[in-house]
Length: 598
Image 1 (cartoon, rainbow, N blue to C red):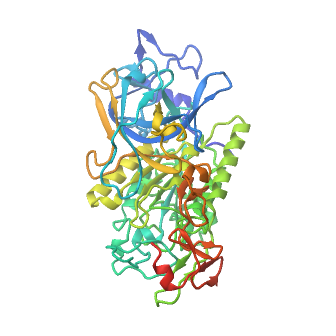
Image 2: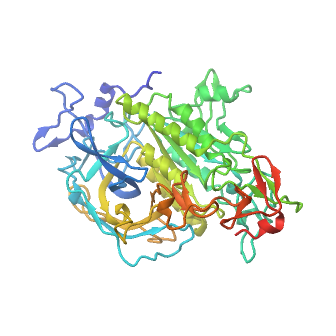
Image 3: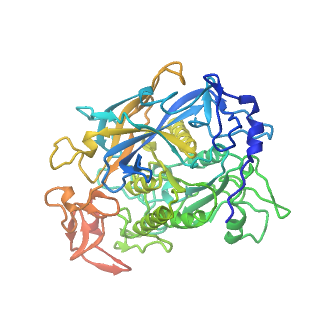
């Protein structure tokens, strides 16, 4: 497939005529052109710093003998990469009337105060000061930190500052391909289990198949997004993309499966027609229209009779949707392709998931009946293997990874914790995992948190800055160090990153990433230390329904309630016999026994 067109070199040259940069009295030379050409860097002004996330990494030696850093997502990390954006004040439109909406300051392409941004010259490791205050297990509902000592941190002095370039050297105005996936499952609207456990103030709010559970009397108390903030923020995200980026929007849920959100103006348009025509560039998302065979093509995640209206129902088929989107995007020709997911929690469709509910009580009070997996359920392990195979094939072809998966994960009342599966996929693909503690935020706080998350993901898509750090507690061996972080745990990392006054910023810029640093928002960075086997989970781990190393989540945890075991189902960490009723691929205890499960 041909790669989408990008502005011609002569076009880029004309656009840059007003921004000639001379450093040290000599003109900069564009290595991509002939030796007599002059490079014209973009003059920009520094605006602010955004801390995005933390990625476990390890040192690797490239074919040219130099050392680099690669994601280490399987427990073999030697360092932690702190990812951040350096945001400029924005570009003005060129003579074509289009502005570059990517506000990430790029090395060797941008200039601050008529000085080219060059690593090791204009900007270096010494331009930053990183302080950590806490590395603690993420519980989902924590409202205050509980760290006695701060983690020890060092920053690599040689090569510790890097720019991770997703555009692979092709520079500004290189078109990207973007697929946006929007969660429409029941938890987004509160159409979930409304039963209350003894002493609870709110229902369990967990997802099941529509009609298989008692729903809440007030859907709002279980809704993760009662104001449909995710839809407005998805639209804002799309409008922040460049006009020359190609983009498409999907919705997913058990009820809707995986559908393209696109108004074609063609009465007979089916999903195949949309798949062929709705992956579009130009500014169709901003102004709403583009010619399509004499008809009108309107793409919007909200507007139009076929747009999203926020009426979520059923279970989440996250990995099925991801699998289909990955297959759709991997054949596209852009040098950088992104899958960006707005979701409120884990996949609840696949029966192997620890979040899958094997048993639910029917609304009429009958015995608990087993739920069958969703018709389109895809197992996480299968999707992860597909990613691994794709990355391995790219490496064999000596080609860099060109697909990056990012998640904007907002809390749901029934699913308050980090999702380690999402963390693994973001780590493997060079994407980002941004978590929002929306359960603790009011409407204004939720909107602000979403907006900040959208900015972090959007401006890291062409590339982002990173500091390579050593965090002893995270990488130390628990067998030899009492201070080591235990395997099989999702951690929250707190601290602050300072950008010192210098050639780029006239004053120090200090950005905290902590719990409630400025509002009620939890801006701690999520990082997973995977377990490798049951031995990582402590003495006695590995019992049939007890704590074990789950090889999907890579967490030390108990199996899902209702999971079939040798003499019945898992209930409260033990195999409970109960009175068994068989249905589908699971069994359920009688109502009295199952009600006692915490």
